Image 1 (cartoon, helix red, strand yellow):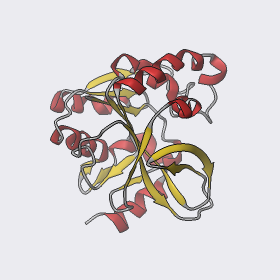
Image 2 (tube, rainbow, N blue to C red; image 1 turned 90 degrees about the horizontal axis):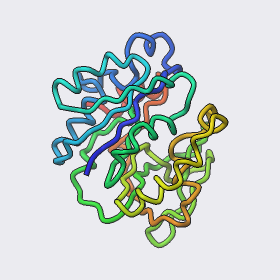
Image 3 (cartoon, one colour; image 1 turned 135 degrees about the vertical axis):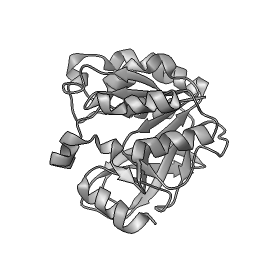
Length: 229
């Protein structure tokens, strides 16, 4: 089992602070957030960790020196979406967690053994912002839609067993055109979502206190003021 962390993005919604410090390295409870995720992974016995970098890549060197993480540089981080970052790490993709770097965890979700592939979900209230909401039937995610309705939405962490990993890798070449890679509205998750009906993906339901996404400074301040000790 391994983990792929996608951390190449520009973090433009963090404005000036995001130009000096990568958003995933902003401190939460005194520790850079991505380092907290790496620690959770290693506590769960997952030491094979690959991080795909771009913006401010040099700031991540300590994770290689301190924890032995593999660092992959994405030279197209300005032009391409996260599908290209996933492609750069695709040789590692089997029996894998895929983690967005801006996820903040307050519980070690990696310690519980999983049977089969999962998307980790958190409850979302009715909101002005649209999220990726999962439809769940018989303990299986059968549909995902982008909506501002209340429900369970993707947190930014998924786990893929060997069988489902292979199906996604077989679909990956269809997403390597410039038209797709340069489309900022597409993400690596669009690959499994297109073939969702052929995959067996279960939901892993979390509470808001277990994890949160840090998309902008408002999210970061909310985390510091409401979800930390």
